[in-house]
Image 1 (cartoon, helix red, strand yellow):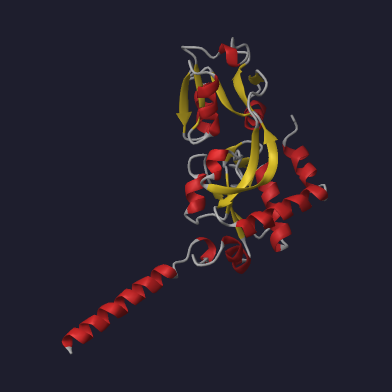
Image 2: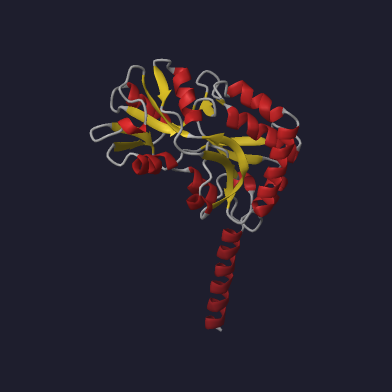
Length: 268
């Protein structure tokens, strides 16, 4: 009888632990057993991972505490299409390094953060259609001897962000140069301004924001890669990808996309 009671108690305890794990809530009170789109609909809010350090696309305004930029305004319109209200959205900060882990951990529903669609990333996440076409370029101090890729030789230092495709691309395109990686582009730009490198490389759309912030810097050499941005979701959530693609098409067809683009990306 004692063995039976003990066995029953252990079984009950195990069942309670499993139930607690299975019912663990993630972002916005979602349950792990449901697909992400179902969680969004039940919660009536979509949680986007966005940059806080990327001028023109996602930059936190120190005076208001709000994140502003192209990605932010587009995300609000997508929320309006999917949930009927652009205010039914929450933004969480990501960097090039953290965005995929945060997405796969369920901390965010989708990433809209200057994220290039690549075959390597497709192994980890699913992407929507392209929502912005960018290309990698170089940012230098005006008057610099660096005018393009051909000037990145042994002894030159190029700065970029960890976890970005830019680091891999520049090592391939200019194998003799030294590549220094920072946690984010704000840190990389600060390092460039303080003379810790000769050039900064990433997508031209991001570099335009830096040049806009400090006109003593300029883009040189044109673009040397194609960087199509997509919205990333956790792998296997095809319903959410379809819903986002439908929303993207609607935003484009309505003219709202061009309105947002012209507001932020004046140089393109």
